[in-house]
Structures are given as C-alpha cells and as structure tokens.
Image (cartoon, rainbow, N blue to C red; front, side, top):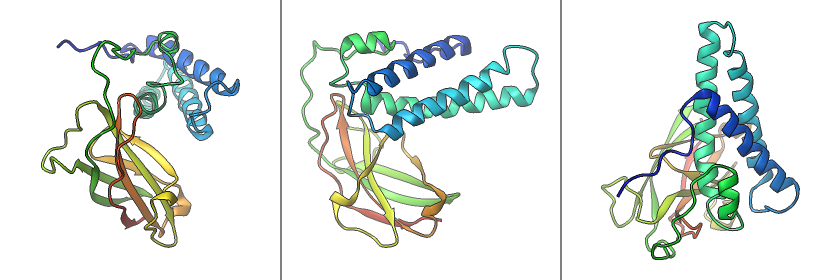
Length: 224
C-alpha cells in the first residue's frame, strides 16, 4: 500500500506559510468556542512554536550567519516535534471535520476502511529514566508484544497521563496532564519547579479515531 506524502512541507518557505495557516486556523476555531477539546495551553504552545520558528526563519531570508541558520533549524525541529503529536491528538477526529483538515492542509482519514474500535490491549511503561534538566525518558510497549516497539494496528500513538508532586499517587484520576507520545522512547520535559518531586504516570493507546484504551499500571520516578 502506498504512503501518503508527508503533510508537513519540506521547503522552509512552504513550511512557513503552511505553519502560519495551521496556527491561524486552530487559534480562530478555539477562540470562537467551536473547538473546546484542545487545552488552552496546547493552543498557546502551538502559537509559541510558530512565533519562534517564524522569527528564526525571517532572519535567514536575507544575509545571515551560520548561527542564524542553526537557530532556524533548531526552531523547525522543535516545532515539528510539537506539531505531529498535536495533530494526531487533537485534529484527526471529531469535532474537527474533513473540511477543516483540508483547510489546514492535513491528511483526511480514509472513511472507506473498516471502522477501528477501542484498542484491545494495554500500553505499559517499561522504563522511566531521568535525563537531568527536568527531563524524563519514557519507554513503553504493548502488553501483548513486550519485545516489540510497534504500536497496535489502528493506533496513532500512546497517550501519557501524568502528574507530579511531593508524593507518589496510585490514583489514575489524579493523572490529569496528558501528552500523546508518537516516538519510543519519548522525552517528557517538565518545569523547573518539578525538581525533586515524584512523576507518576500511566500510558494508554489512542486509536486513529481518538478512542482510548485501558490505562496501564502507574509508574513513578523522582525528577532530577
């Protein structure tokens, strides 16, 4: 089966216009109250990455230094790392429509295939490794295929549910923060005030239609 062309443009000039359009569309929809499923912090993050990218890119459209080029490349890499899980988690299922995705220049879901239901197996976190700088490397597997990093058919990522604080928590309901992990391992970046606190987290598969599977066991690590 042939793969679709990547929705993210390769050329920087095209990427700049595409990203501007995506950010403007999401911002308008959320500001109008039409899309309430995207947390405000995620919308702010999208805009922040666009502004950082555009500022760095603009400096390279005329005479510029190698430092400017490096800054532009770093800004694009950071932006793309934010965009892919953002699109997968918030823009690939209702209330976002096919018409919306066309306007944002994203891929539409194939509506002719057999509907994909709730993930049947659990995602399990196999490793939590503090990397310093308030970052934690997270590795995860499917409980049915513990030796493989592959995600189950019909899933677009692994949703991390987490919280941090002075004590561990064993309550899944307390894991109120989320991030869609689309790479394995995944690096979670936390604020400076999390230093020395406990990170408590669990994982669950997310289907291509946004349906979530059962949560795995809660794992803990001290944030360094």
